[in-house]
Length: 294
Image 1 (cartoon, rainbow, N blue to C red):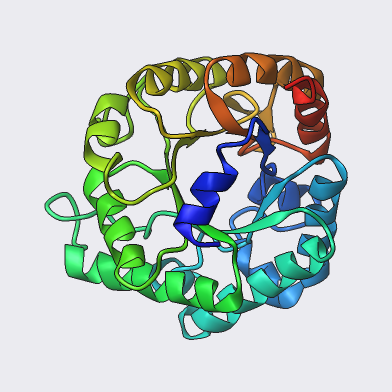
Image 2: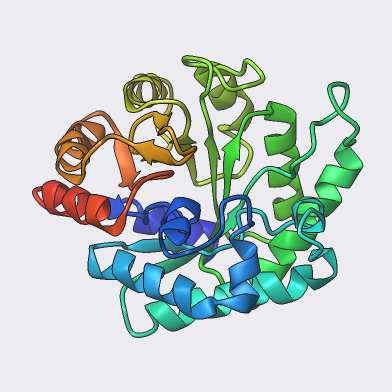
């Protein structure tokens, strides 16, 4: 979907429900901790299909492809760099198959590169540009409806990703940041800096996803709503992660609690609502039921 059509679509009163977590839910289905979910795009596509079907059955209007770590650098860690195109295209194929015949959009998920940008790391802007450009082309050619550059923490990297995408396509584009240090990202970026830098960059929505806790993310949502007229994507974790004695990670917010809080998200400006880490299909169903009034 081209950007202008998407923006027109967003002018409706509808609140859109995105999906829940990919990684933590696939771990519940047997994905070994530490294994990249993109491995299962090739090895166990039926598990991704099953998860995305559950999201749609519970109210998702938008599902994200299993490509968060689908750029060449991240795939190198799993020995899959030479299969980057196959993985991205196959992931789109899975999501398109699940959404066929339904009023569900497929968003191509693009996470951070996995390397720090200069001067804090070794990744220069040209290399980052090329990484995002390559993955975006795979996803767009595969047939996604829109792209989401998500869990960003470095403003320069996010700007580079947007420039790369806009260098070849006018596809609908959302950019979402993760706020891990209170109302700042890991690199100290504030919501106001994000709005100042990206409002005129060619994105159709700005977002918040992942992060440390629901309360802090909610405060960021309210601040963004006071700073911009852009639609807001809100996809927080199901609370802060907690580790048990066996080393397993758990998220304490129940589906009922998350569903009730979703009403406040919408009342404070969220146009898209869903969940990140720890958000199960049951959480998503509770969110969808509670925002039906809107």
